[in-house]
Structure formats: structure tokens, C-alpha cells
Length: 372
Image (cartoon, rainbow, N blue to C red; front, top):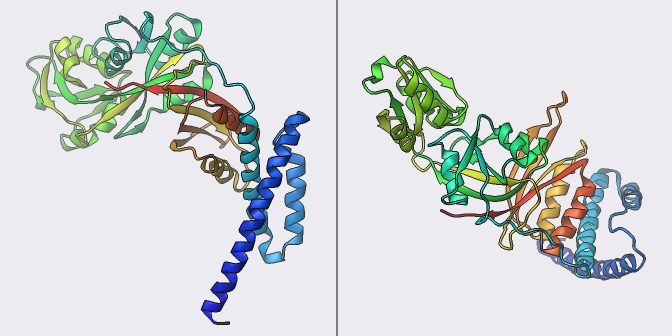
């Protein structure tokens, strides 16, 4: 056969495959109704493994893995279809709605002038903020009920994820209820009278030092990490040594410091995303970003299989990141953000099925995005 004849035959086969696929999906719809009537789970791993083993054994030797992969995807589509059908028959999920306007006890890390304070004021205009020395202290305060909400940085557009926050989300039973972003404008601040040539070291948070690395390298300035940009500024302002701090201009003014250089970040458009956490899972009607953490079986294709389920559900992934589990192994946990609202019964059903394919699964929250 010539190429055109081969393509014609392939087109004919594809048409048959499509018809068979649609017939299979019709039967899956009947299976879903039967499972609902007899209270059976959508995911039945023993039957699925037996079916895939049977397909693999029947395939020719050089196509065994490809055949198993193809039918694994078909089974995933079938499960998604059954989950959607069953979800339409369920009662809508109900979650408490966060009342940001009534909240009075807010916590964040740092001190006056910190970017976390700016983010807190975006979430809770005019409310007083309790400052804590570390991110973990904020999580502990929320978990103990000392504050109603905690505000923490989670991602910077220049230097990437604030990894301690992600690790603490996995450690503590707190939930993301909202997120916003703050424009960051770093300056180099010193005590009055200190010149650039006199500076012995520059203090700031590790993220700020990374975000201003080009400036620091150009001027050959020694870097020392500090817990927060604002607390670094307060330390430098009170020190008798010729130190400098990287902080916001507002923070420098509050500490009566001189600004030697302004806008020193590597990238002019520099934003940090902050999350607002609560002790209880709460979902606003307009919440639009769902966050989860999961660990997967250490077998080939486990991640692609999970990601394919998001695609089949038509869900928009906005973030995927791995972090070490910190148990002495080399295993990782995946942090995923995707668009959706937990009050949507189809998404609730999807997550219920998704967690069955994970070794560990944790729902981190459903955030409403707050703009300034």
C-alpha cells in the first residue's frame, strides 16, 4: 500500500475505535448506576489490576507496556465518568464560610513594616496584627486558637517558593482560606551617616537576599541571613556596627534609617504571594484555588497517571512542586494548586477518588484570591 492507502485504513480503524469507545462509556454509565444502587465504590483496584494484567499478557511482546498504558487511561476515563454521574446524585458539600470582616485576632511573622504586615492589612484592613518570631510560631498560634487567622509568604515571583511555609503546611492542621500578592520593593538601608564603603555586612531574610543577589554581588557585600526583612532593619538600626539591611522603604522610614539605594531587586516587577490560614476548613463562595499535598507510590508512571486525572476532569493546574518528606528517605511530597471550589460536588467527588491513588493525601484548603 502507498502512504495514502495506509492513512485511509487508519482513518477507518479510528472511526471503529471511536464507536467502540463511546459504546464502552455507555456501559460505564450503566455500571455507575448499578454501583450507586448497590453502594459499591467506583475504584476497585483488584479488578483493575487483573484487567490490566490480562491486557498485557494478551498483547504482543513489543507492545505489552503500550497496551497496558492505553487501557489504564481508558479505565481512568471510565472512573472519571462514573464519579461525575454519581456526584450529580449527591448532596452539595457544606463548609463554614470565612468572615474576614469580623476577624480581630490576626498573626504574622516579623515586626512593624514587614511585608507580612502589608499582606495582613490587605486581608484585614485596619485590624491590629500580633507578630511572632518565626513562621512555625504563627502556625502554632493558629492551631492553638490564639489568633483566628495567620498570614505567611508562600511564593515569590523572582526567587520561587518559600519552602518553610510548604513544610509547615504539611506538619500542622491548618487550612488555607485566602491568598493575595504584595508588590515588593527592596531598598538598602543603613543608620544615618553610614556610607556604602563602610558597610561590613548586609542583613535580611534569605528570600530578600536572593531577590537582590545581583546588586549584592556587584558591590561585593557580605550577606547574613535574618529571620525577616523588618526585624533585620530593626537590628541594623539599633546596632553600633556599620551594617545595612535589605527591607521595604516604609520599614526603613519607621526605623529612621537612610536609604542608600532603592529598587535593588534583580527583577523590577517583584511580587510575593501570601496565604491566610485558619484552624478550621472554611470555603468562601468565590474561593477559586484548591491546594492539596500528596505522596505517590514509587512506581513508574504514578505521577503522570495522577496528572492525567486532572486533565480528564478539565481542571486547571496552577502549581506543582515537590518537597522532601524529611523522614530520612529520598521520597517527596507533591504540593498541587488547581482552580476550583470545594462546594462543587463534582470536585469533591474527584478528590475523594484521587486520594485513593495516593499513599498519603492532605487537603490544604480552598483559597479566595484577594486583590489589593
